[in-house]
Each structure stands twice: as C-alpha cells, then as structure tokens.
Length: 519
Image 1 (cartoon, helix red, strand yellow):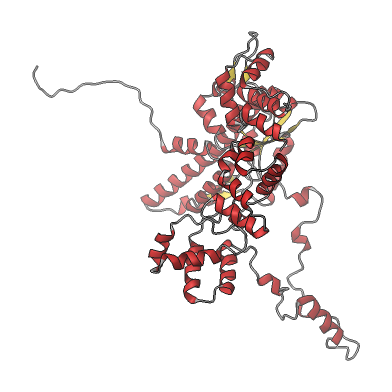
Image 2 (tube, rainbow, N blue to C red):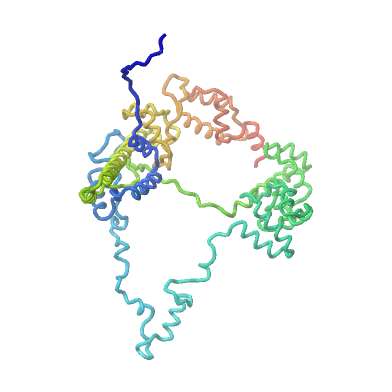
C-alpha cells in the first residue's frame, strides 16, 4: 500500500457544548441560593444587567401573581403564558401586602431636631434641661454621652469558646508559669469533643520537658470544668465524670472495664462481671447514660444553617395541590435596554462595539436561561407531586416507586435534565421539607401480582413493626418477612436485614435482651 497524501470529504455528526449551553446546564442544577450568588457575580461583571426591584418590579410581580404564577399538580399543566417570568419576579414587601405601614414611613424626617429630643425644658429656667431630665436621660442611656444606648453587658462576647473557658480556669488554678504553658498547649491539642488524642510523649517533645511534668499537669487539668474534659478515651471520660459526682466505686470501675458488653446489651455478662444484682445494674446503667460522652460539644457549637426550599407546595382551595417557586430566594434580572442603546451609539472603536455586543448577548442569554430554569423546575416538581399524590394525602406508607425515567417520559424531557433539576433542590410540603430526590425510590415486587411497593414505604413498615413489638413477642427477620408477604410485599430476608441495619435497629437478640432488662 502506497503512502500518499490525498484529500477526502467526510460527513459526521458531533455534539458541541457551546458556552451558552454549558451555562444553562450549570444554572439548572443550582439551588436558589447558589443561583443568587451566581447572579450577583454576573451583575458585577456585566454592566447591561440590572436587578429587577423597586416599585416597578413590585408592580410587575403583583400583576403576574394575579395572572397566575403557580401550577396545579392535579393535572400537571401550566397556568398562564408568562409563567416562568412570573415566578422569577420579586414579591411585594410583606408589610405592604398585610396593610401595615412600611419601615420607610416610620422613620423620622431628615430635618428632625435631635438636639431637643433628649429632654423637655425644666420648670426652673424654662430654657435648659432640668435635673429630672438629666436623671431620666442618664437612666435611659446608661450614663453614656453617645447617641446609641450602651451597657457593659453589650461588650461581652455572645458565646464562650471551649478554649477561653479552659484557659480562664487554668490561669487561676495553675500558678507555675511552666505548668500554665503546658496547660495552654494541651488545650490547643483538644478535639471538638474535648478529648486529648495526642500521645503525651509527643506533647512533651514539642514542649521540651519531661513526660512526668506533662502527666502531672494533665491530672490537674482533668479537674477543670466541664467534667470529663482532657480524657484520652471514653472510659477515662466517664470515670472523670463519675469521680466528680462521687459515684466512682469498684463496681462502676468494673462496668467501665466492660463497656463492650454494655454496647452489646449483654446484661447477664455485666451482672457476672460486676457482681451486682439486676436492680443495682439497672441503676448503674442509668447513671452511665446520664453522663456526657462528649463534654466539649457543649461549646463552640456552630449555627445550623436551615434548609431553604426551592419549591413551595400548598393545598389548593378547589382541590389538588398548588406549586410555585420560592420567590424570596429566586433572583430576577433584566437587560438595561436604554443603557445599551446609549453606549452602543457612543462606541466608536471595533473592540468597544464587540465588547458591548458580547455583553448584550450574555445578558439576554442569562435572562432566557433563568426563564427556562424556572419553567423546567415547575414542570418536574408538579409531575412529582401528581404521581406521589397519595404520599401527601395519606403518608409515607403510600409512597409509590418512582424513577427518573417516569418523570422524563411524562414531561417529555431527558432523564439527565430531570436528574439535574432534582439535585440539591428542596420542596416545602404540608408534610415537611423534602429533597426532590427523596420521592425517587426503587420498587419491590408484590407477592400477589399487583402494584409494586416503594422501598421507602417498606422501610417505614419495618420500623413500625419493630417499634410496636412487645417483650413477649420479638419479631425476627424471618417473622418480619412473613408479615410483609401477607401484606403483599415479596421481599427476601437479607433485604429486611439490610433495611433494618440502615434504620439502625438492633437485631432481634439485642432487642430481646433490652426488653428483658426493662431498660
């Protein structure tokens, strides 16, 4: 075969991910809070974009709400032509909608004479303040000459950290400077639960002192508040707390030596190891449960961030469900057409005209992507609610098996699009806050040849059976399989065991020990 150069013409099809398409896909899988952050960045970079807010934006929002900004999940159809534009508009101020005066009207005018607001003229001279006025002014302002009210309590920190709490105590208890330095170093080595996980020899090497000095300082630090701090394991932590309460006796020491038996709920083995009666063992275990295994968590608690719903769901007055996007967290932007017209006329050089044109196309594409995103989320959420209507009406036991393919086929979209829409999105329902992914569960066949059962509903059924069992009849996994098959659920024993372990339910042997001990 000769190696020659020739020219061929071939025809092929390829999928090209344009930047605009990549942006649309990126916006689709964002939550409302992530979308708001992204829009803020675009507002900073694109001068042709502006946020839709103010009186005009509120008026548009009100008109859009009257035209219908929600969907009824009973039929899964859209209401109105400008639906996505409507759900992205910002709502009115809550005080204005409620008929209450706004904050702007409650503010004093700018020409207020603040110098004469602090007291009325006294009866003595008719011009200056009276002594009573000074007394009233001093009582109301804490003796400060500043305009804002101040008090000594306001200078204190809102929360006390674990490190500050311990350092304040060791500065009072430890008088030797070397011991204080060792104590501060050990405080910095504590984990968030209050445990000292580092080896003392390593700490001594870092400090350049003997291990005996570090151990002696640690013993004194273990007497600080909260009890159980500076422990090196769970056994030592519980022992320190029992010593603080005066309840650390030989029986308790034996119980702490056999925490593995307590974890397995082997109460017969514990009675034999501790050499106590059943009643004494019950009291000892109750004291152990009253202790705090992680004393350091009482400090430095971070503020839990609440989940913000992306979709709101409420019952419709005429029946069915009403679905809408959460407009409070949904940004709405517009293209500043007057500004674009003015700057495009004033642009003279070619780079300026190209920049303005590129920014204009980017702004239009962002507005279009936001519109398409809102419409897609409403379609997917409405179809989920329509297919899981029994769940919202009767509870989790009526949750139906559902996969992405079912929703995609119903709304004529691709499965990947539905997957992106349901990622990191939450819906506020009358039954609580749920992630959209929660409603997609695998199916378990029916033993009677009927409709399949949802895996989540089966797990709920297993948990209900275990919670309602009595000490006289502990349900084994085989017994649970028999009960479920009588209810029409064709399930294997290993599947029941897997669901039970996922629910963190102990085995039948452990539950029988727990019931027999009456704990």
